[in-house]
Length: 470
Ligand code: SF4
Image 1 (cartoon, rainbow, N blue to C red):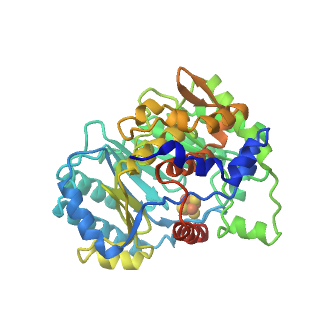
Image 2: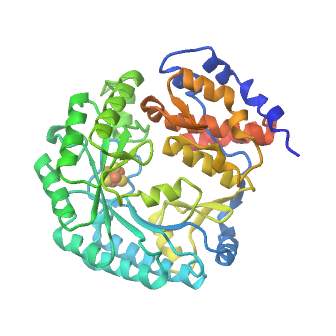
Image 3: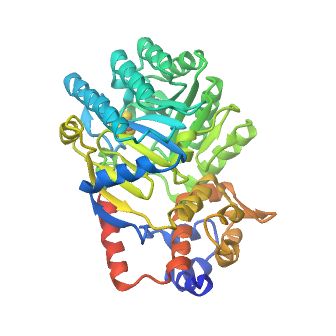
């Protein structure tokens, strides 16, 4: 029998919690927990060669929420803020990679991975999937349909840049069942876009969005806030431009300054000075959130808004609620049953393994029985709404009582508010949701397992260092 109330005291005794409790103002949560890296405590590391066991166990599982992800790690251009850029476009390498993806889909089907699971979402991500030519797009979509029985109304999303989704690629996607396009617009202002390495002018961007929307498919865009040279007025203007183009949904992301990106390196060397602090970024986000609400957009999460009824952001919702994510490709991670896994980072290694009948996993972990509880809690945080009654099927603990001191503190900081036993994030809370997520999961793990032991702390520290090095 777990003594949750006693265990969670280890969380309330943490210095970063005490610092939070002693502070007020919008940035208290940032100041208190800024160095907190959440590393799951009870995931057991396993070597990648155990992938066969994972596939065998997964093939026997009853049907569960599942998505399929295909990673296309090629880009024609490198964006200044990007850490994920891996391979410049090279036609022969892309063709070789597509053949490996086709072989991998066949292999997964033969292993029985799709026998009981019907993917509710398929996502082509990258990199830039729109580097594929129409024949490659059709081949992959046809293979997916023959290998797996997709759920009715399966959401099939294709991530694309503006500059290389030609009319024939667009048509190949739609003919193969793509019903949702996600464009990484980031900003509409031509000058600002070019400073990021995105060459299309505003008029070309709006033209491409309108062309896709006119086909009747869903058109989603990403916008970034906090770019040097971008004022709040420019951000709000961009939201207005997107709505005028008839987009179906929008993601709004804070600029992440990643150390290995060209932008991160330029800032580190002092060649560029970053203009914004946390308070300014929070103000920008709050203004954008208010405008979207005023325009009738529905917030599906802390960073995604829907402009039409049938936009559900299915893939992201599945990812953030513990669903199975079957991945094809290099340098991408997923989750099957009780395991998570990471595929090999190197394209050539992936091609060699996928074409010789191996699932190219470089490392994996096995969860314990609390995995779904923690994933559901994290998913609620991502959605900006905590409803502890929904956790009852995963745990016998009274989470509302256990977390009450933290929730009260967050109410005082105007990060959330309570209505009828549910907790809704304010706009400020939505701005801080990633940090609140790490804090909540850390608190929940304390309630489940008590204070981490010395070995556990050392292991977490090591994994945290490795995570920050990526
Ligand atoms: S942000 Fe996307 S499109 Fe730009 S370089 Fe990175 S992976 Fe490629």
